[in-house]
Image (tube, rainbow, N blue to C red):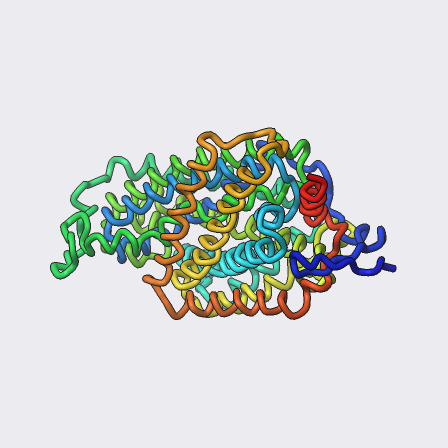
Length: 479
């Protein structure tokens, strides 16, 4: 039984209170992760970006263009992470970015943010699946070749592990991530002796491009076009707060975990970008599905990095499945999306929230277009960054006294910087492939239409994310 709906005309939504039985069927396992496990989760989201994907940016900006883009994007992500650390300490719930935006921007802004994150996390594993296929094929084990059945096996196996429960899944993820980081260390040791600065400038210069040079073969515009690929070095780290409801002492552990993960990723980004290009050559690496392996050649080190690189791709694939399931779970539990999607099994894992995006991702992976899927995922991510940074600024202005166990250094100046770069990143995705990003925009609009027509009239007032927002609204009314 549910209570009668109560209309919030100022927000244009209707909310009702669901029964305890409804919420009991939608419970995650509490207190599973500490800050170290969360740091591992943050690295695992991203580490596949070190092994493949970023290198396609060399074709658009050359080494110089991609390097400048990477510095700008690293700054954006550092500011973003510091802003999200504050938001996650104040609002620890499974909705992550959706929860923050729901408090700051209302139901429309919350759902828009959650939708953008869901687009990102549903498409990113599909891109990673194609890179897994490339690494599997390069190993040549038992005559295995890249193909649809490799993608299917990856989705089926790792979704199955997630269905067994979050504690087991996060521990497996942590071990795989540690192996992936070891692989980057081995790569660096093998590559540093082969580094040749002339390899950084092997891409032909476009003499018609403004500002073109050996280091910037496609000119200044190449820097902008390389931004979506620079994002791949850090894409999805913002998913750490999605584990808030399954974390012990989330107010402290989520900020510590996400900042520790970002520190590691800044180092791996610099090492991989410089050494891979300087050993393998910018032109040669610009279209490679497994750049670290191809850069090292056919030696023992290359073979070892190939095996471990596969672990790195699996780590991100595995953890982003976790992320999309929690984002979908939170939106469904609160009534923004069909509520059946948030029902959890006996191990407290959201069954349909794991399976449905997995099916969609598998179908997308059949295109085999990793670079295209990467850009589409970046579009969703960049849109969510814009909305989350606006949320931070709004909450600082509107609710200055809201309890914040962690506060962003620099305050709104820090998140304002991230906001500006995120807007630039959204535009940059259209430079790479306007048709594919236009399709993502249509999907985003379709979700918003669903909300306008149906789900805004069926929100669940006593879901944790809605309760955070309703508390703030009640306080505003008292004032």
